[in-house]
Amino acid sequence: MSDIEKLQELIDGSNNIVFFGGAGVSTESGIPDFRSVDGLYHQKFKYPPETMLSHSFYVTHKEEFYEFYRDKLLLKVVGTPEVPKAEPNAAHKFLAELEEAGKLKAVVTQNIDGLHQSAGSKVVYELHGSVLRNFCLSCHKQHSAEEIFNSQGVPKCACGGDIKPDVVLYEEGLDMDVMQGAIRAISNADMLIIGGTSLVVYPAAGLVDYYRGKKLVLINRDPTDRDSVADYVFHGKIGEIFSQLHV
Ligand code: NAD
Image (tube, rainbow, N blue to C red):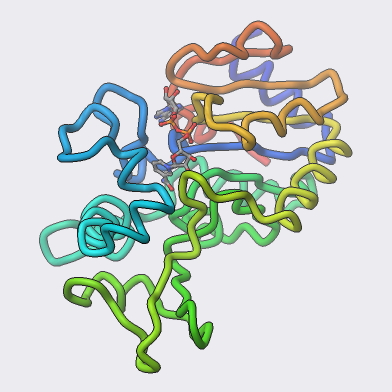
């Protein structure tokens, strides 16, 4: 039996699937991940990306924070005449189809690009928030990604308040309701598919330990430290792999 046939058989025999994913799910949509050789962490910036995406940097260096946020996190999500807007790929679409068919109960994602929802997924636990939402810290008005992308310098709300992306920055805690929803879904899953994540960002990566079943599937381009604990490991591009499966 080929790898694809095995994966199809596992999916066919499950009706409470949960998917846990990361940046690798969106690379085939043109959004770079962080830790691959062509990822953000291998590019040269004035400060390390972890610093520029930290809460204290947001507070003390707002102008540089927004420069980085626009260029590295919003550009591909919003798109320009030169840079096409990222669209959901075969991985996002297949997961939405599995949910529509009643087989998949939740997507738990570390991504902040909104592509699972664009593909049609309804139950999405966004552990690290979303660049599609940006809030005024004073009046709580919501500002779109487009509005922030097209603003200059440090964007301000009409009320004069500071705006902060609804993204969990380094030094910030995760939303407890989102965490609890994700834990509940993973604890109850009969199959957990982990895909496109290096599994090194905590506490998010620790969520996979809540899975109690015997169908822990890991799909990643590069090996991870958790390959040894998975029941099935597939190395490859997740969009290419999922495009060979059916609901
Ligand atoms: P990561 O960059 O640490 O790891 C990505 C992993 O995905 C790598 O192990 C790589 O081998 C694998 N990968 C890359 N392309 C793949 C493909 N096509 N198919 C299968 N595997 C592929 O990403 P992470 O573990 O998600 O952690 C990084 C953090 O950065 C997360 O918290 C996330 O919020 C954030 N992030 C989000 C986005 C996004 O929203 N699209 C993009 C970059 C980073």
